[in-house]
Length: 69
Image 1: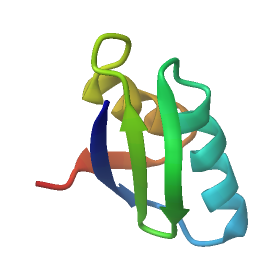
Image 2 (image 1 turned 60 degrees about the vertical axis):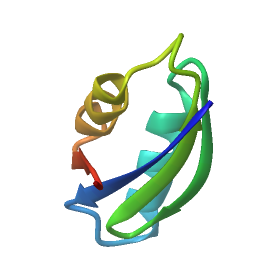
Image 3 (image 1 turned 45 degrees about the vertical axis):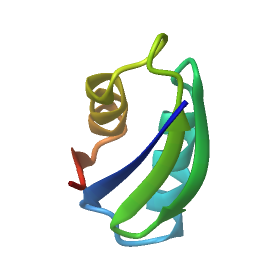
């Protein structure tokens, strides 16, 4: 399992936090650790999911995400 922090832009309210949490939680092999306005932290199974899958899930929810180095 790998831990990952994402910077998420476009979030401004509790609805945004909920939408990003739901989008990330729907990705197979992902455990959502924390979502706040502007960021998300997850633990995921690298055999099941890629960072790209997580970024795409956030994008599908209407937000932009990038991995925090």
